[in-house]
Image 1 (cartoon, one colour):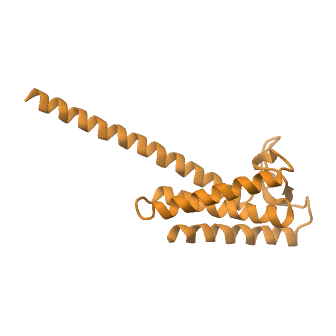
Image 2 (image 1 turned 45 degrees about the vertical axis):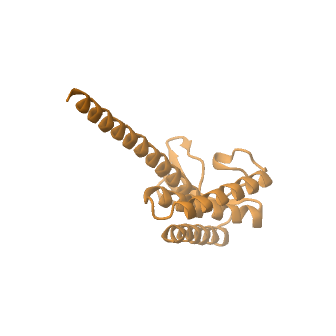
Image 3 (image 1 turned 180 degrees about the vertical axis):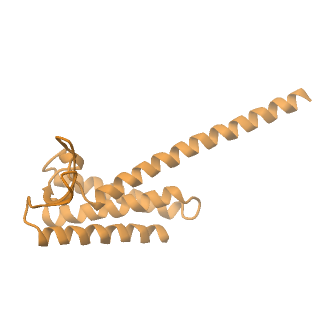
Length: 167
């Protein structure tokens, strides 16, 4: 159940920050936080991450419904067996539902976190995007940990078989 609480916290933080941006800043308005490096701005995105697939709202709605259903199914199936993977899925779930609600209600997602690296501006994003990226990174980490753990188990089995064969 704690993993659904993580998703709820992500969702509430995401929606709260988007509400503040949408109601307090004009579209395109910028507030420097750390000089020109980190800026809070008001931006809208009709696409996915980095603005890809702009205007494909129904595609995102269908994909999000499938992803959310898969996450809920997996969380219910694997409850209590592991900690890192369900935590990661909670982050992805909260972020996916946050951006999903924006797309359904407004047809676009509110983005507001802007980072500049010299003359390069990283694509503007939001809390939901951040949690999705962190969640996916943790899923990859968990998978790599499983692969490494499987290799260690195989190595232990093989060395045990070699020892038993030598006796």
